[in-house]
Image 1 (cartoon, rainbow, N blue to C red):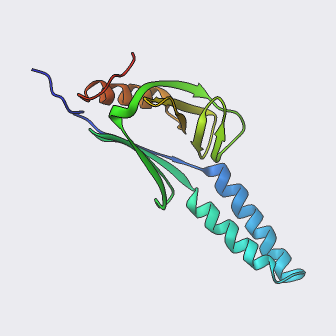
Image 2 (image 1 turned 135 degrees about the vertical axis):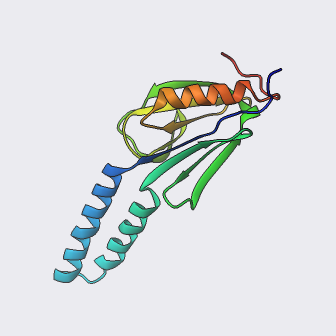
Length: 155
C-alpha cells in the first residue's frame, strides 16, 4: 500500500551574500555622504538596510500539500498548491537577483547564484526559484507532486 501524502519534507535556506554586501556597502556610502554633504542621504541609507534585511535569504519549503518560499524574515512570501504544478526543471538564470519577470522564466525569485528551478503550473504560467541545490529541489518536488493524489505531473 502506498501513501497518498508526501512522507518527507524539504526546507532549505540560501543566503543572499552578494545582495547583503552590495546593499550594506551602498548604505554605508550613503551614511558617509549624509555626514559629509546632505543629511537626506540618511533616508536612503535606512532604506538600503531594510532592503538588505528583507532580501537577506530565500527559504524554500515543500509540505505534503504546497510549495512555499519566503525572503528573509518572511514578509515577502508565496506558496503554490502542489496539485497546480505540472512540471519542474533545473535551469540557469542570467545576472539577476531579487524578484522580477522574464519571458523565459516567468517570475524569478532569487537571492544569489545562477542555479534555479523552473516550475510550470497547470494554467500555463511559469515561475523560477533560485537555489544553490537545484537537483535536490527538483528531486524532492517531483516526489511530493507524484505522491499528491490531485496531481497530473509530467515526468
